[in-house]
Length: 195
Image: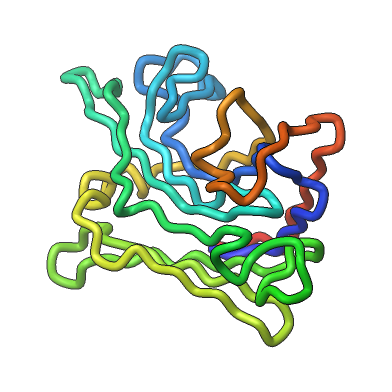
């Protein structure tokens, strides 16, 4: 999966996300548009793979596996920190500065490669590549057994895009900024999405 993204107007503590979810939740087959995610927004849980959770100070990838019930509905969604990877302003060459490999004041290209175990066919990792002109940043999960649990889920996920913020965004900010999100000015632009 790859796309171009402009996060120049997505500030500290704001989040633009492109992710995949197994929407609708199994307990909502009567409504094919009923939203679900790993946080249970709207009361319905389902597996979620965050291809991008980002603002101009941070860019991260995260996976949330959920436990299915006997009916096929989900509960107890979790993630494994070691499988979550990202780049952050002040510690990596990403952020709103011309001295960075990826200057988030300008659009850049994002590519996500999903890795499958050649023997078992299970989902086992990913590589994320951010490109801007001749500059490139690459980060990878390596082999992550936690992702095995999502193998079948990944085959039936849909794409969702959202902008949001909450009271505590320290998990995303990683110390690179501390002010709150001005939700009135959040504008993110996706283009050239291909799978």
